[in-house]
Structure formats: C-alpha cells, structure tokens
Image (cartoon, rainbow, N blue to C red):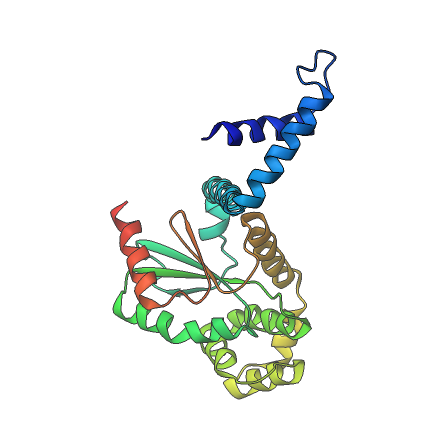
Length: 244
C-alpha cells in the first residue's frame, strides 16, 4: 500500500468518526490531505473498482458462511419433512432438495436433466419444495400438486404441469388435473386443507431463511446451487457429497 493510499484510509476513518478533542490534524493539513486524496483517486480510479470488488467478495463470503450455518441448523426441515413429496429413491443415500415454481421457465428446463439423473442414479432421493413466487396461478398449481399426492399421483401431475407451455391459470391447473385422471372433488377439498397450506408455507419460510430468492434452487449437502445448473453440475455435486 502506498503512503497516499494509507493516508486515504486514515482520512476515511477520520471522516466517519467523531472529531476528537486531540485532533492531530490542523484545518490546513486536512484540506491538503483531502486534496491529495482527491487527486490520487482522479489519477487512479481503478482503486475505487478494486475497493468495491473486495467489499462485494467479503459480502458474498459472509452470505455463503451464513447459508452454510443455516443449512446445518435446518437440515431436518430440509430433508425429513414428511409432508414434502419425494421423487427417486425414498431410501437413497443422497438427498437433493429442489425449490421450484410451476411457472418458472428455468424449472421447466431442468425437468429432463433431473429425470435423467434419477434414472441413471437409483440412489438419489429428490425432495420437492413448492416455492410459488410467480403469482396467484403458481400458488394454485402448488396447492393442486401437494393435494395430488393424496391420490398417489404427485409425480404424474407434476410432470404434466411442467410440460405445459404458456402461462398457467387456475383453469389450466384444474384441466391438467382432470386430464391426469384425478378425483376433482377430492382434489379441490385437499387443495384448501390446512395440511396443504402448511406444506407450502413451511417450504416458503425455509427458502427465505436460507436466502433462496429465485427458482430453481438445488441443495446438495452444504451447497446451494441456484438456477438451471445442468445435469453435469448436479452429478458432480452429488458425487462430492457422497465422498464427504
């Protein structure tokens, strides 16, 4: 660090703290220091970018550590909530948690890779977390999806909704349920049941606590993978989790 950069750091500190009775700088000295710092920054604007990048890196590291601690504390809620639908092997040696929304295009894009992974790796347990954040139709779809589990048709209904192209609506959700062959009267009753509401509310609160703000998001071990990460990334993370 140059002497001027060091002086700048001191100046910033002084500028953000109360002026002490024993201020070592005279007004003339402080004006000269301010002018020198300003001149240095104008000649070397890259120091501002470097400073902002360093601050962002520290913030990201702090957020990641916070997420890691939260993942450890909330492990049971993540992987062992009996109300959550499970795909793949219920007794698999590795659990993957997915937060998703039925109107999320990236979630739809991940369906094929996920199904392929579950086919090629029979020891993966895939926990589905309904996280309807894209409007009222997403909430309706989530309620219907959770309710479909009571008829043993969660997987079939889930895939049918994910295969739908275009904006969802309440009518589309119910029509899809009808096409899948669900008992519509039972479905509608189960959609408004307290247990259904609790399943969605618990998943939403869990996502917020973990800092999951978008879909899809995958949790494997102590890692949160946001976005449409692809099959290779999922496989690599699963293998890493197995080794650890």
